Image (tube, rainbow, N blue to C red; front, side):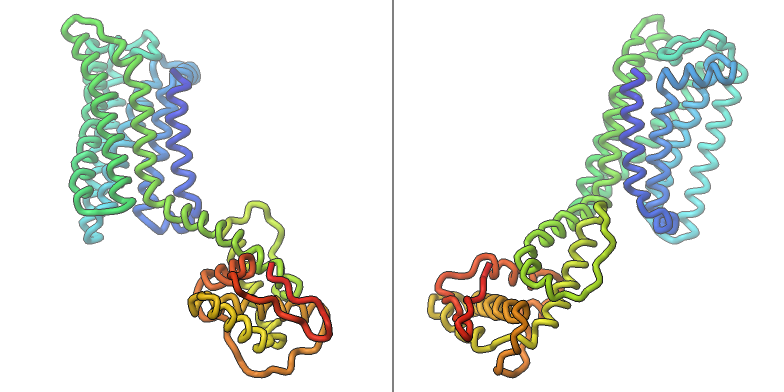
Length: 394
């Protein structure tokens, strides 16, 4: 069972690390900070609840079952952090948010203190690592302690369910999907973990034995609930930047034909070699380097080449935009050949801006790279002066 519980801790912990990838920014954002704290406390709850951890804590402290109030106190702190997260998520006047946060902390702080006091007053000398809730269900003070921690956790999860249902009607997109995942996780916690615990404890009160609900069913339900809640927490915040990085990787690769053509004339400083650089950082450097190369090649642009290829592409039935891209690709290939051969710039004069330099972002460069890689049908090869080979379009 320790493996199942530790798996839940790992899921929660990794979610917290992903959200806290920029510590300085997270500390300045109450919502991000409260989200990370809630997820981290959830991970600690799973670590503390594992039988292996309970045994180690009991042995280190020399107090049988000392891990129980530690785990229950941690679970209460997690429940409090969930409420604080919901308060920050909802927002509102700063003073009101602060008062609600302080009230939640005070209420659950009193609950944790009550758990510690009740454990100190109870007679729980027999170590129980997996079935403490049911074994001590009828023991004075332990009974109240068990009931208190369950009620405190239930209150937080039920509030979370209510808030997710309400907000789920008001938002759209990834935020709605995240709220639905959190709702599923919270419901699974209530119906899978807590209901199993309540049923097993009440069964003990009535003289029946349904301990398997608490020892066998509840832990995996809690782990699965943690997985869903963690996904709901991180999805709206991490999926958009992840998709942006994925699109950046695609654009970076689509720029290969253009970069292969102009990289020899680019004077932009190369970034430090880092295999771990994110795709968007690589794309930004490549975009800057290509624009630098285009400036260097501008004096070699032969507008006669551009006009000839443009007219040919229009005659072949291409749209004006496609014809312009094909013409610019041919002119750029011719300019790169002239620069590589150290030829004199062509006699044709005039200023011309490539489509790629007129639009923001990498879209224009990607279109130019694709035009280089796949020239439209009907674009005639350009004869180079002095018997030189025609410019390559690939």
